[in-house]
Image (cartoon, rainbow, N blue to C red):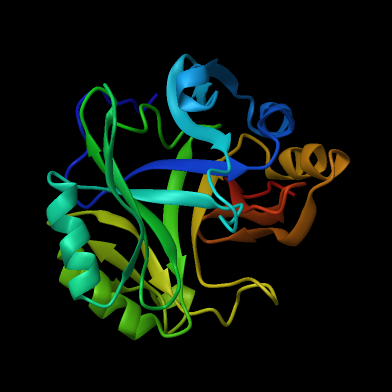
Length: 257
C-alpha cells in the first residue's frame, strides 16, 4: 500500500479536494463509489470532510465558500513557500482567486487560474502533508491539465513550477507528462478529447478496483458518464460528472474479457 508521512516534494501534485453545495450528499455518493470514510474537521472549518481510505487521507470535500465558486475537484501543487509561488503565478500571467492564507495547524494555500483558465491550488504543508495514500483503490493515481493551448500552458507551468516535459506517443501530439527531477508527476494536454462544454480544467484520477462496478455505483446515484469505461494502455478508464456537477476520472485494471 503506497503511503506517505513526509511532506510531498515541491511542485508535486499533493492534494485534491471538492467544493460542493451539499457536502452530505457528496460524502454519501463518494463513499459508495470510492469506498471512503470521512473525518469531520469541525464547525470552525465549515465541516470540511477529510476523505479516508484505510484510515489515511485520500482527498477532501467541503462547502462552497463564495458565490460563483465552481463545483470542481481542485488539484493542489506542493510549495515550500506559497507566497513566493503566488507571486510567480501572477507574474507569469495567472490570476489569484484566493490570496495566500493559513489553515491553522494544517498549512498555507492559495487558489489560482492559469492563463488558459485552469483552476488549481498551491499547498504549503505544516501539520497536514496532503495525500497520505496513493496509487491504491480509493486513492489519487494521476492528475492532468486539459487546456485550449497546451503549449502555452506548459510555458506557464514551467515558469512557475520549473517543470520539464516529455511526449507520450500513445496519448496524442498535444499531450506530455510533466517532470521535476525524475519520474512523471502528471500530464498536460489539449482539449480535443474533452467532453463538449467542459471548461479548461485539472482532472483528478482515482484508482478503483473495478471500473465498471464503480461506474455502475455512480450512475445508480445520479452521475452522468462522459466517457468509457474503456481499456487504455494505462488501465480501464471512465470519466463521470457527479450529481452536483463535478467531473472526475476513474481508473482500474484493464478488462480481462
